[in-house]
Image 1 (cartoon, one colour):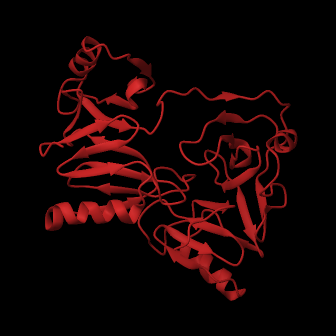
Image 2 (cartoon, helix red, strand yellow; image 1 turned 180 degrees about the horizontal axis):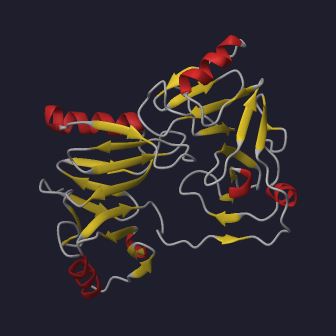
Image 3 (cartoon, helix red, strand yellow; image 1 turned 135 degrees about the horizontal axis):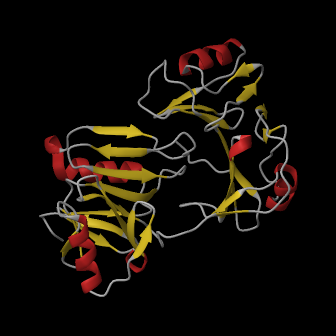
Length: 302
């Protein structure tokens, strides 16, 4: 293992500085490894969500210019380095260099390079590089599988957008319930953007107009519901409390007034008796608006 930087281990993670960072590791294990290795030099660790609909947490090791992404079971599933983190693959320095030189070096070594929206991917090694505004490498993303996937729209008839969801304790909403089949939901909700989730589940359907991201298991049964509107406005109600887009403290106070208990989490709160979570995007702040409501059939014990 290098003490001078990180080496990509295809589909396994990265190694360096006397430390292995492996996909599938729990968040507390990763944090303990970094803390033990770097001690007081570790610097700030900043938790956040990359997007409102993400069910897992990201942790940004600011001084090391490294972000590690966790799923809703707190397992590591993606690693992203910034331009200042020393990352290598097959003897090639991937960061701190002109982007075109990095692509040329990878090609010269015989690695298959595939163009993506923001850069190039190396599918057989499970990573991608993105180009910054100055022609330098901006970041390196390391994946547990093939980083190149092309989601597409299904062909069901359009239906009227849902702009209001009412939650049903432990089940989901009045429209969408955990355990429903993917085929049944397609008939109900219309066309979806089909994709493979980066972790957990076998398939994922995005219903942007309905504010829904749905994840399914190998039997095509619904296991996770995320309610989060992007680009359009919508609501999610529980016991006459509107949950989305309102300050976290305001929402939890309204729920408490109705006898609904909310357990604080790193970025939001869990409503254990009713099976859903309130998600925040940034640092825990009473005024931070609730960005998403999540129902999951399987949650880790805390």
